[in-house]
Image (cartoon, rainbow, N blue to C red; front, top):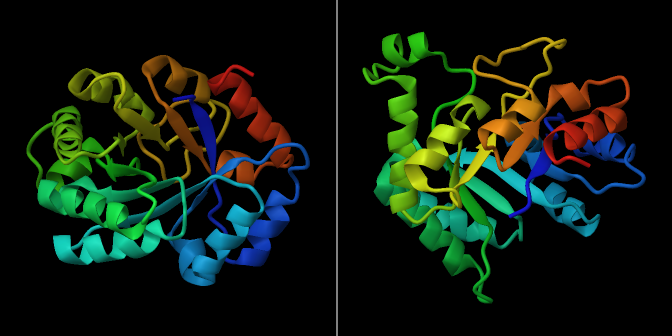
Length: 235
């Protein structure tokens, strides 16, 4: 699968999202719709952006009992998005239920890619131990969560770019590593903890990078997007 840059459209409204994307006259970027935008604008924002030709990662991070997640994924599958996710902490059973729901939702047998969040890029090793009470190391935790996702039949995981090679070693080269936490050395870290640059993410093994504020808050978003693509995809 060809690697790509996904823009995190973390905007408070449909109008703000459309205004941002109108900057792109030549490209139709792969975009992420997260909780803020989806809760504000609902399924219609997904349908409209599909009509405009964008590929969509619907980033809702489902984490509930297996039956609830299966039913929710059955509904989300009908939105015809390209990628969805769950939390790997929900167990193998829950992840399998999510996959079943995606398959049930589309009579044509097609489904989006489904990936599992291992640990948020804002979570530090200290927080993992002291707040989440996980005694294993960050790397061991992520490798185990990735193997659980693979066992459940998922296509890959979300992890920080620093752990992409670890995921590949644990689950094989075809298992996807989707990595937020992308920052340039000359930019603010914001609330991210485990980060690296687009070029380094490519070297480590990321298949997709998810980039938000370095593009959406840039003075020239199109130039910032093209810089990320050049560094990560090589174009």
